[in-house]
Image (cartoon, rainbow, N blue to C red; front, top):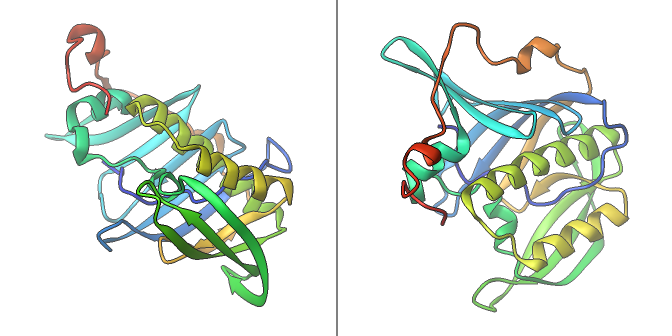
Length: 234
């Protein structure tokens, strides 16, 4: 499944809930493993993620749910992400892990440095925070007052929060504080340290059919209802 520690270090409100686009990004998990992904979105209500790291599989978020679609023995199978998480457990890290490390924000300060990411001019911000072990850490964030960036980060974080809720992951208060600070300034995220960087980002709304579940696919039943003890929340 395309569930690796990658999306989301910050979020902001979209300039227009119906705006959409496509982002290509590179991210690294806590072990330094690199992941590339393409994210297509329309507002916060529709999102599709594909990755060459997981050929033949993709994820769709729609109607308040996240689905994983994959080929299994030549058959297209659709499974709700919450059920896949019950089975995979710790094999599927939360995609919000990049902000889950922020237990409390010490400061978020703009610097004089400028950086162009994905062709968008941004400002380097210095984030100082405490992690879950109360160790003080710093990261460079590149933020921009750009509609494409604000719309994408809003869509991506909505997706990540939906998955976090499905897995029982509790996002710490520091992450919400970071979000509020960025949202207050009307910024969008282009880079979060070396954990995530947007490679390209366009504002062309994808076709509605990109977010349809595949016709003729086999949809797995609610495994939690059939087997209440399966996996369990983390």
